[in-house]
Length: 378
Image 1 (spheres, rainbow, N blue to C red):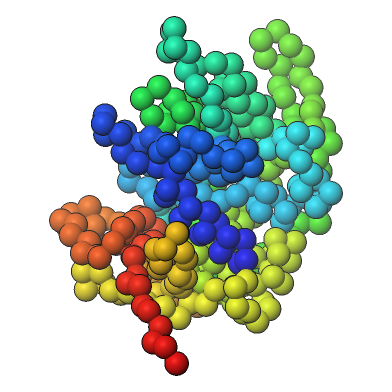
Image 2 (image 1 turned 90 degrees about the vertical axis):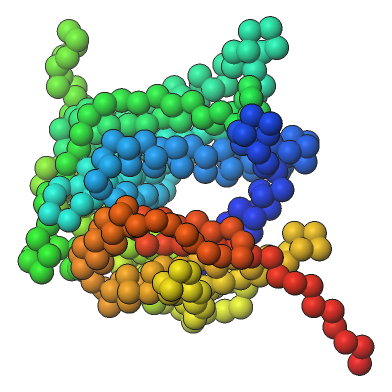
């Protein structure tokens, strides 16, 4: 949770690095274009990846418009099935996608997409306006990462490789390559065996060496290569794992440590959320806001940017959060989907005295500037 607080702070600091240019496109401010060397690298790692992931999520949502989408970190998922000596090695020696996007709809099998995101500060050529080789290399690297994991049959999972140019021509530019396909997870029945409400355990160790079987194709013989292979027999377990890891992300976003722990396996770090909350290292789900007569429960923190004090609230729809706190993931998904359909047929007003962002899964993040309170002299 300490890392979550740090990421909150980083995201707010990046507000100073962005603005809307004359073309009404996102661009870097003067401060964003002239950062310190270490901060420049941080921009490429954090900000550029954030833009890429947002684009990937949008693409998947457009591909499955009647589904909701959840994003989970691949390394967190792999911890539950592969030995830590394999799943937590660097991506250079153990390639795997950065993120997994699950498109889900109650009553239908979930669809999974692999995502690899990179970013850079390269500038387009003044003579041709074309980008330099960094973006191309990052897209190629993304293809290598996504090939390191397979779900079900070989080469059936769709992939998105993204490279964000923070100083692209005309503003921030996200370059995308896609590999078609469709990877389906087994349909779960709420209340029956194999539902996401069931607690799952870590696998004893899914093999990594020579785990991916590549059939004969394009004149080449069949062969095996190292990789993270989710076999046919593990698809049901993997679907539960994705749903529970996604639910843990929602409750952690809202400050619910104990609720987060119940959805994680031991190797995924359950014990880190079972400890008491400490100041400046944890968050507590004791804050609430009301927007358009709708109540949201979550956590809030106050940060400073220069002499401006900003309050950041992150939370969830009150009713949806209550379901997750009880461990009812399948019922949460059903209710979230019903609200998603209802919002499509209503006019949004979202009255709030600041910036606010709603997600289809019921989460919300709201920023507001606090007035400066001067202390009275003693």
